[in-house]
Length: 341
Image (tube, rainbow, N blue to C red):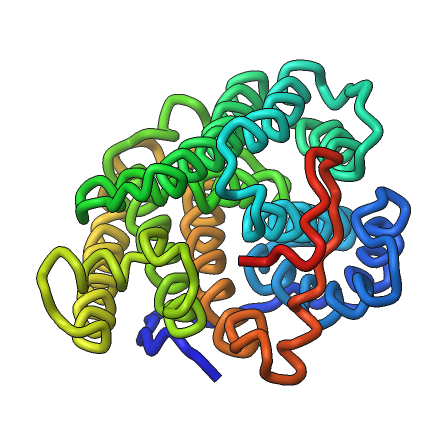
């Protein structure tokens, strides 16, 4: 089974509510129309959405774990919609993402009836509960970056554009939605980093390191499956191979080395945090900074752990990975059945 091969110096933790997430998650997915058939339900279970939610957001409690699993269902089922012919048609993708963007301005209201919009409207109305206006604005902007990133990516695919390494690293942060998942660390953990320290250089750089290594983990786990696909430009392993003119296997080792450098830098920054917090005011900020840093670490190691045990990145013809080839149209823009690229 493909694995990232990363040595991550963080403890793997898992919120102890996997069965609650499983019970709720499949019922919510059916109610929203995200899962319409037994085949789609098999796909949902094979993708291990409850396990991913509880690993990635290990700070989830019994209240927030249901939102966590619903978010993961939405992220992955939306992403799958663009793995077919739709993902090579920029104008069609734009028609999909524009209503999603609008939902972030309405507090979770939509007049659309297609499953992807019904589901996101429900999620958004729950995500913003109890959070400050500033947090909600950042969260909304990061969601829109993610949605619009699908439009940009479709345009690049249509043009046959190839990224250089600098362009790829910049674009990848938006396309995979990692910024919004990091925002959600606070919402799922039911705390909020105060506005005045949110972008302190240490916290900002630590978050940036986690975002980069999470993206690298994903690409390392998936590049073998993507080797014969049409979207090789979307994976950093292929970008490094092409940019440096080296074999793919060597490029993968370069990416691992880069990820390990990022993780070492994270640990350096973390070791300096006690002095930073003392200067900022430990009584005021100490607890929330500790929660946030632990939450960031959990997202990265949790995602990597899930990816290393999931069949999502196996070949489509490999059972039980074959069940993950099932796809239903959730957008109303196109019927992608049997069109998986």
